[in-house]
Amino acid sequence: MSANLFSLAGKTAIVTGGNVGLGQAIALALAEAGADIVSTSRRPAEETGAKVKALGRRFVSIEADLSSTAPIAGIVERTVSEFGKVDILVNNAGIIRRNDSVDFTEEDWDAVIDTNLKSAFFLAQAVGRHMISQGHGKIINIASMLSFQGGIRVPSYTASKSGLAGITKLLACEWAGKGVNVNAIAPGYMSTDNTEALRADPKRNAQILDRIPAGRWGESSDMGGAAVFLASAASDYVHGAIIPVDGGWLAR
Image 1 (cartoon, rainbow, N blue to C red):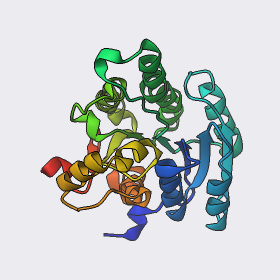
Image 2: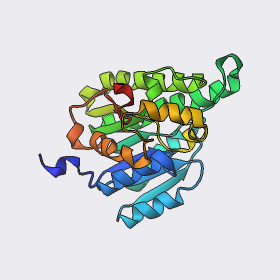
Image 3: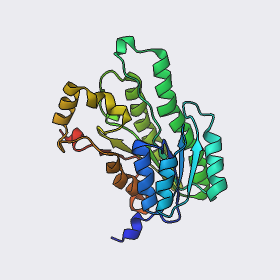
Image 4: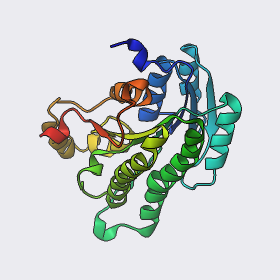
């Protein structure tokens, strides 16, 4: 198999939440494979930008708050203006709220659903229109173990990630025949800001590690290989897949 199948040379990728954590790691992996990067985040992605540019790739940072759909049109317009096209979208931006379900507030429900599901769908829609018109494109949604399982104390996060898995399959069914691949990556328990509370709780930390066959929390860099695969020609016949990157969590 030719390594060129995994090359992203000449491609342009939008990565939401690309300033830190999983988003930054995915952006860097795509850049290492040859892609130019557009990162969207609430704060400037200066560190990501410096690292992408050090790889010899072009980089644009767009400050955008995806708690609403308001920035979406501007993100797509800016990307097309700068690079002339959009080849790859990684819907990574997301938030989490924790509380017992009996006490969970409507405010926390709406905040998570709006960011993790509503904005992800409408950004995929906006980018998808462009990709359909150009005849090709790759959309990668960042799902979760809670796309498959219930979890505890995160009702809106579970709902959003279950919904994102469903939307991934729906868009794949609609767009596969139009040259657009829509797939998802489901990270397991990763060492990120979202899991800081779990890792700081000795009991929960031990319970989680005991369940992971690999015996460790995932690192952001563990996401890179799956992202490059789904963004490249190597996955041209892959549609509607949700690939776990979980250290074996779902296998146990």
